[in-house]
Amino acid sequence: MEGRDRLRRRLAAYLAAVGFGLAPGCADDGLGKRYPVSGNVSYLDKPLEKGVITFIPEASEARTASGEIENGYYRLTTHTDGDGAMPGKYRVTIVAKEVDYSNLLEKSKGGIPHQRDVMKVNKQAKRLIPAKYELEKTSGLEKEVKAQSNTIDFTLSD
Image (cartoon, helix red, strand yellow):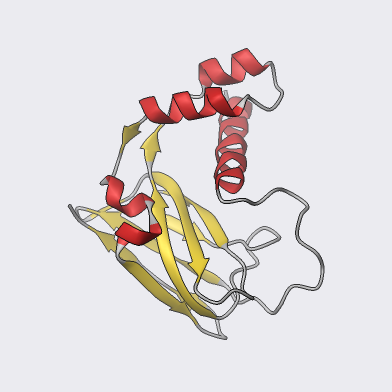
């Protein structure tokens, strides 16, 4: 069961990366300096159980950073696990859904599932937070990453 949960988390992270135009191994070693970014996410005064947080840079030379939210805590990754984000201003999105990937995993038999099937499963998922937080234009979340270790918390409401 633990292996299946790990596979589900990896699949969720992969799907989030694909959704934002990223793919494993696409970044090069010449990325700019990144700084640690972590924090807590709460919704209605409770830690957000799970989700994905994404920092989308305002500056074109910066890169998107994202992280998995577990029990209200996240840590950002730009290229390698936990390497943080480049300094600058970001718009932030948070996606938190109760998604059942079990049928999708069985159907793909360990391979990468078809995008059409992933989209169908995500459409059927139960949202854990309001949909407005899923899009950078409607989330209302903007933060700045400084050239230092950053703790950035989010308190979400309806």
